[in-house]
Image 1: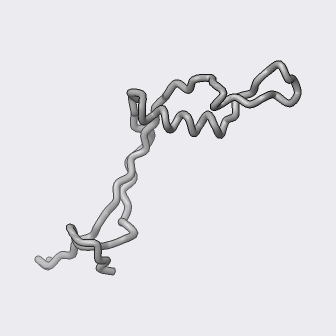
Image 2: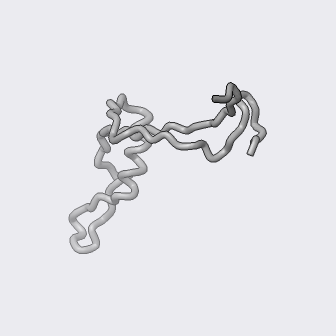
Image 3: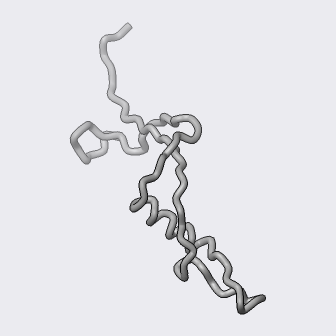
Length: 85
């Protein structure tokens, strides 16, 4: 067995999920074209507000699934920005 080794940079990715309250305001509601007296939730706008709210509200994050460990796509020496591969 050799005493020589190489240094490999790895990346560990953890997926977490959490829940936030999104206020039902004009920011997420659109007019309902089928019923002018009603409003509909715009899912895209609601998701954008949810992301913003996740930075303002306290969120309880829980791990969702397994941790993924893989080779980092950019191999470089610690403390440098120059790629070694």
